[in-house]
Length: 259
Image (tube, rainbow, N blue to C red; front, side):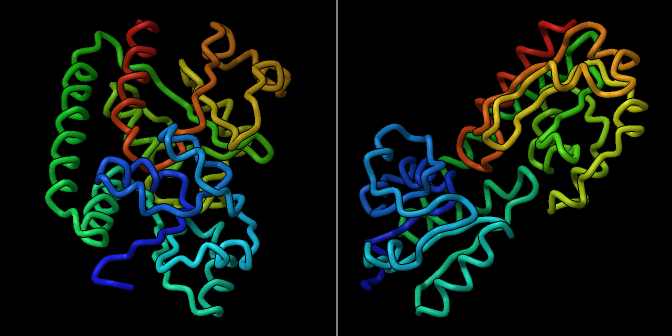
């Protein structure tokens, strides 16, 4: 390997999008099957799922760097490390982590100036959304659901986006404290008693079905269920990457519609 890595396997779905913005997508030689952005990355060899992957298939790309994310990929990281792979293992939790990741990858690929420009742009876009969110006549009470069995509230950066867009995350304390899904489990009683106006759901790759929500015991007492404000959110919101400002704008538009 030279001064900077030239053959990168990106098993974190948000990483190809960041590297594309840093003019380094050409260095990516393998991606996760869950990668959806940018479109030009999708022709790269798909060498892994999210939780599981073949170490042999990954190493067949002769990477000088493998980038992983979250505790879900910890076992895969251990196997790759045991085979001598050079790793970066990201663990994003809050929205600020996307900026740290951008700066880190900028340094890794020798594009620190591009990384700072990207951070500046995204920060400005998010602040513009925050200003409009503050101006909402009514700030809706929002519940974001990441999984349905058991009920799992959204992770920290999703809660941050809800707040920036002018919503009030009813499980924000849990979202900001809990990196792991098990730390963000919500009981059915808590769900009913949260009294939220809007429900957002991205079920980790499984299509959201509002009928499942309506069948929950006592669901008819929940304002969002009564008014039909149950919305599917694109799964890419669960990636802590360059589309965070885009998602903030979409949430803002939804909350404006709910006024």
